[in-house]
Figure (cartoon, rainbow, N blue to C red):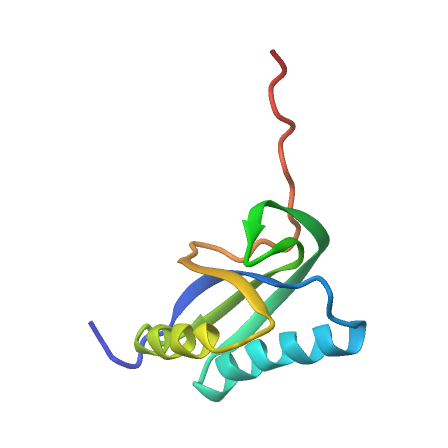
Length: 113
């Protein structure tokens, strides 16, 4: 496996809901800058808006959700995760390998019954 190969990733980020619009944009820029500074490329950012959390996290019940598709070298993921753990405005995050960039997000309705 080549060290120069970049993989496609899907990252879900939940930011503190009490942030002002300006502070929230700065927090998102910090996440995006971390990817770009490590040689990554951001393909698309899906803003999901303010949503209720499934469960309380550190006394918080809501957060702003963002889904990012980006390419980066695999070794940079650990560096990003270390940075995310000290990012005080970031409530939760998850990064997964992706097979394609989703230009539009679509959700299926839950089955009734």
